[in-house]
Amino acid sequence: GPSSDSSHKRMLLFERSWAQLSVLCFTSWVAASAGASPAPNGGLAFAATGGMHSARPMNLGLRQGVSRAGGSSVGKVLMNSQSVDKRAERRRIVSNPNFNRNFLGKDTKEEVEGMMVEEFTSDLVKELIDQSYTIERDDVTIKLAQSYGFCWGVERAVAMAYEARSFYKEDTIHITNEIIHNPGVNKRLKDMNINFINPDKSGVKDFSVVGEGDVVVLPAFGASLEEMQLLDEKGVRIVDTTCPWVSKVWNAVDMHKKKDMTSIIHGKYGHEESIATASFAETYLIVKDMEEAEYVAKYILEGGSKEEFMKKFKNAHSEGFDPEKDLKKVGIANQTTMFKDETAAIAKLFERTMLKKFGPETLNDNFLALDTICDATQERQDAIIELIEDKSIDFVLVVGGWDSSNTGHLLEICHLNGVEGYHVDMADRINADGSIEHRKIDGTIEVTKDFLPKGKVNIGLTSGASTPDAYMQDAIERIVMLKKLEKA
Image (cartoon, rainbow, N blue to C red; front, side):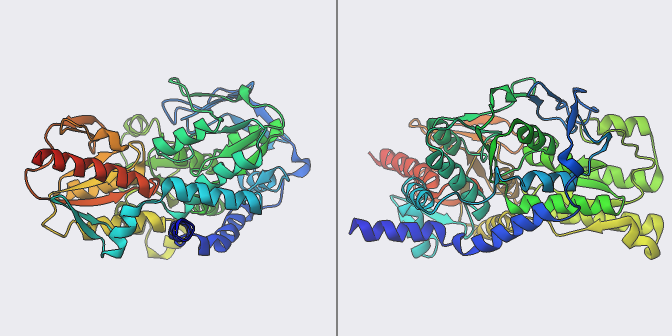
């Protein structure tokens, strides 16, 4: 009956993640707690500099509760007139009784489970799994990648945000950015009367709307140290949904600092996760791809124009960064949603570079690379590679937010392998006139008319780690409807 069916759906949604929650919580605690002891007396002050350097087009400053987002430096933070120990400061903040990293209550947790099953699961996806990931509907054969959709970190973040609304029924709730990169999920939270503190066109986040005692949700990407300090100073209650894989990267940059290394971060300098990671690093440089990494490696080996170097990376370095002295000891970190093969290749490149420059005797002193590639990102990328080995596939439909880095890389893999792919963020991008509005690998949005081949069509299907299964079903149902209309 309906009750048993609901129970089955609930088990389907949570079976991939629930068994990991005890490990997840422990990992989160370790990531937050590792390192130095809390700062003495909890002393804290902000020097409102408006931005310490030109590390991003939009520097982030802290003034009167206003945060300028998108900048790699975010105002000088002083503690007892000395530079703050960032790991110790993070530990101090998360140890505050108002800082919560777990679910809030048994009853509200169970309520949220039911809501997420109802809103996000898919009978079509369940059928695909039961039928060895392939089904046929009205001349449309759908082949689902064997790893897809919500990862447990995203699932946990959304569930905690939902629960915050249920637990703090009468309180004002804010979130410091999109909870995840999915327009449908974020709209649902807005409909719950959760206030989003998104940056405006100039990159400013206005935290003056946050009052003492309000509830603030930190998104799955994490929040910068400066934002955490500002919220701590305001005396708010924090619900931290940061993915433990992101916290693992922060631990890596902590290790780089211990070894007096520059953190080379493989990521996009304007991405929320990279902004947060950079805020926990001491000296850093952000490279977006292998081309930029090779430029840096060549500079290490051969030198070059410092002026040209600084111009090339003007939006992606720490305050006072000097390529002539800050590239002698490097550690590798990454934005967890980047293309995992490229992250691994960049790490190998710098390992070879430091070996050639300084010799094998001092390699461990000059280079460090820890495994911080997210399992979920890797699994979805491996699955799409396996899927497109099937040469019968006419195209791959990639479902996920247009600003989702991990989803964009799934499309990129299709492109690199010569397979047509269409990346849609919502089902209604598939139009009744037979056209599709989709994102290309360069980020531009394009409308392609008559995108469906005539007659029978084989479609590969996947989705990013921020995409509920139900959103894939909605998109496929539109394609099947177009095929029905073709026959009419």
